[in-house]
Length: 281
Ligand SMILES: Nc1ncnc2c1ncn2[C@@H]1O[C@H](COP(=O)(O)OP(=O)(O)OP(=O)(O)O)[C@@H](O)[C@H]1O
Ligand SMILES: [Mg+2]
Image (cartoon, rainbow, N blue to C red; front, side, top):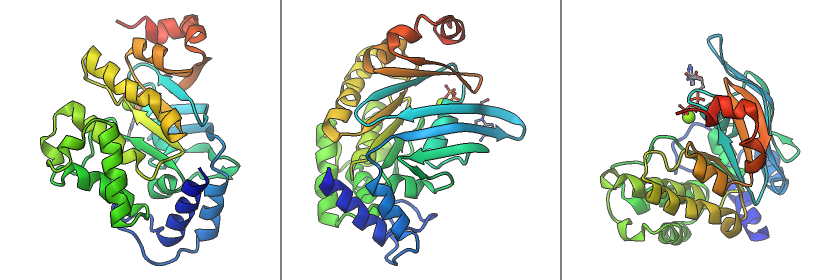
């Protein structure tokens, strides 16, 4: 863990331009270096949303939501379509600035940081829809992320292959990402989020559209991530069987508000959850 943190600090000192594409490192030292190095020092503690609200032209997508992701756990985030799950994850990864409230990494207020800064501080994610570079190979997709986070090309290649291998897609390393079967594409997206191992990994419906067996296979990997990488995982997933089996804790959103939080056993008994979500379909 210490080694990882040291590497993260080095990467932070060497690249910190907000709006560059992934993989294009800025060689100039940044005035934010001291703060960012400090962030990696205190990132052993929770990633938290504190009273966050997001409004889109008057529509309250999420309202006064508190949520904490802890290292070593798989936290489930559930709720009906439009409940605000993706918006909350966007806030927790720097893709959406909350209208109110704060995002905290340990003791540090990181509200307003760019997605690149979140990633360098140890907060990674996958997206609800694809987002691989389709005209690059699978290996290049993952490698580029590692290089962008400060790894040497050699270290990036090795780390990328390790992640692809673990996720069972190493055989596709030289294929173009655009021709991958859907299930493999989702695995590559996770591999990309795991290089330069994050402290937190937020997965937005990683198994959407998969059959039960494909879903179980993918979630098998997700369940191993905290032990293997030492990070906290936030999992958005609609399949309640999967959520109940995979998650130690669950937060439920409905209409942009947090309506329940607890163990799977406790949450599924809450009347509000049953009517809002479990009762669906
Ligand atoms: N960029 C945006 N502009 C305007 N409204 C948005 C935007 N993004 C999300 N919304 C709205 O905010 C609400 C929450 O959306 P969000 O995508 O966070 O829900 P979700 O729980 O992830 O849903 P799903 O299960 O369908 O993925 C919805 O009413 C949605 O239409
Ligand atoms: Mg969503």
